[in-house]
Image (cartoon, rainbow, N blue to C red; front, side, top):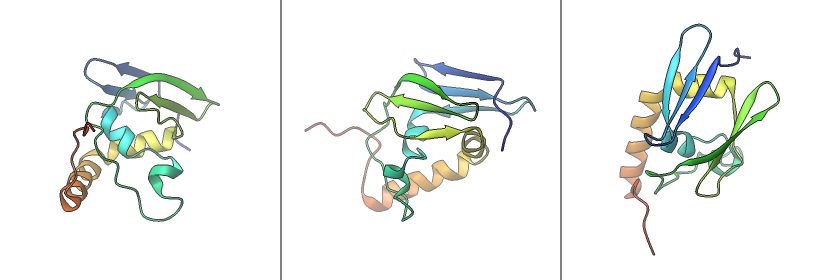
Amino acid sequence: MADAPTDITLHQKSKILEVVFEDGATYNLPLEYLRVYSPSAEVRGHGGPMQLVTGKKDVGVEQIDPVGNYAIQLHFDDGHNTGIFSWDTLRELGENYEANWADYLKRLEEAGATREKLWH
């Protein structure tokens, strides 16, 4: 299991979660990225293929709760709050941000979907 971050800062205006680890690794993770890569069963597909989450460009976080000594729970302003982000998950998302984000944009394009919220 990864060491706990030494600092986690939510930057509301820029919609970034800054995560700093003891070894000096610092990740600035966009909230949209965290939302679409949430470790929740809803997004991860209950063991099946990962769900394509769309329309989350402007998603924010209303609250962050600690989960034991191993994770945080993010309460997104779209009502999603079932993803538990372990320290391992946060590090993995930070280390693989560029590849994951490129993959997400490719899947959006292939689905003819958008990052923008569609108003009905």
